[in-house]
Image 1 (tube, rainbow, N blue to C red):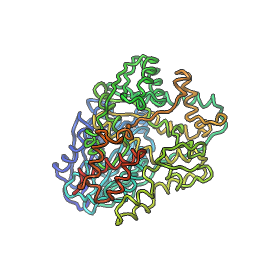
Image 2 (image 1 turned 135 degrees about the horizontal axis):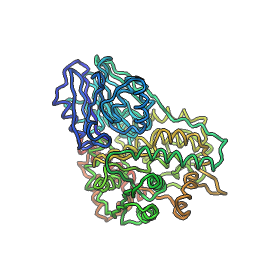
Image 3 (image 1 turned 30 degrees about the vertical axis):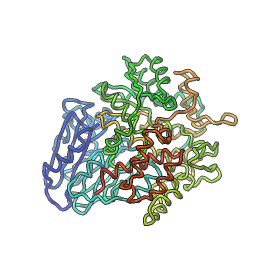
Image 4 (image 1 turned 90 degrees about the horizontal axis):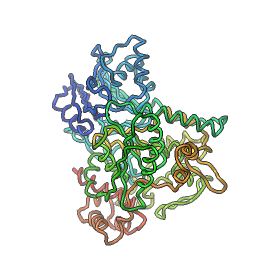
Length: 599
């Protein structure tokens, strides 16, 4: 786990050591254990290292023995030992014991297709001196970030947007349509960023740039395909799922540094801890945070898991001071990001890093096993949504328009009112990515459509982005054994009836996972109401509270930055809506980002 960066001058100018060093330093928090840069003529690579595997010889940028292929790499390759043996059999030599060198030789052997052989989380850039090109790639599911900037004179990349925004002379023109998409979704979907000339490399994609300045379009090398196998029984699926999860967790536990697990008390992290406990010869270190507000506190359930597996458990009850740490959070995300659970993720990462360097999480379980209540609504099974959003039964009309109604935070009609008149046409722009992905779901049943859309949008652009940035602020590596390409491809063969199961007039989400967990936990623990991992924003907005007054004063101030784009009277209308806390949080995060970045 590291921070990576690089520069390629498209006009042939030389890259100075100071330029790549400054860019590299901008991601220093991601890698406190080592620093490395390489530059030659018009190309340069930078690397900040968080040492996890091969602590003594894994420094980067790293080169093959012939010194013709160099790499800067962020992530972990869990099948690197198998790949190494395969490459050694083909005659490739290794000077280190690192997974990084395996990628180099995999590229030498398979070329761009090397990414198809990797099982893990990764974002990397390779300099190929023979072919005179830069090759960048991102993992199948988007666990690790990779952002690039491109104009007529330079192509640059880094792990974080905020790093690229510090390049001298960079064009930071804002993409206002991206802001509208943020208000819609609470994140900006790839390939967009808040800046017109800066882009996210999408999950499962790679691209190349020649030293002469020819920039290829990103190319997709993998996507999930749902092909249900109806021949297996429930018992067969449970047995195979358990073995698949054990195999994934085992691979994700490989490390030469102290390792633990996030334990929220939910089913997904509880499943991961159960698997870890069976695979370890010593107590697992587990970490949780709780809140004084019991509506947002699952720490009692974490105690059940910790006692069941005799973990070395660490739990802190917090009065989260979200408003004071908001500036730091916003700075690191580099663009408006409105998922309020970034705050508790920040706190649990901060606490965890005091004890270990690597933590496994249960992220991805809701997408894998249809765990969100929205899946029931989308399938027309129930109609329970906040008053702020009105939702139709979807089963008779499973269109993209209805899917977007389901996932929006500020509906289109309200966004039209919110924007100043000169910007209101922005809300009529299509979401190109969503349209392209939804077209691929036409042969899927309703539940599978929802899973596919979330796996290709919400999961990488919200969940995984949130965890990566919040954890790497503290130089903590978070691994996601449920979000593993082998696990994903396996679950994609499971009929949706095993995920969202009908029991009389009710429906059970995560049905197959719950049946598996009956082996490890009491039914009372398993079959309980789902609880989220977010902040009580609606509570904060109650009139007269200190937080409410602060938020209102900031968003309604005459010199508020959002006044450039939005109508203050409509902002006030939003603040007076008791159920609109999530939307207000979006505006607060945007106001903070604009305050830091207006130019």
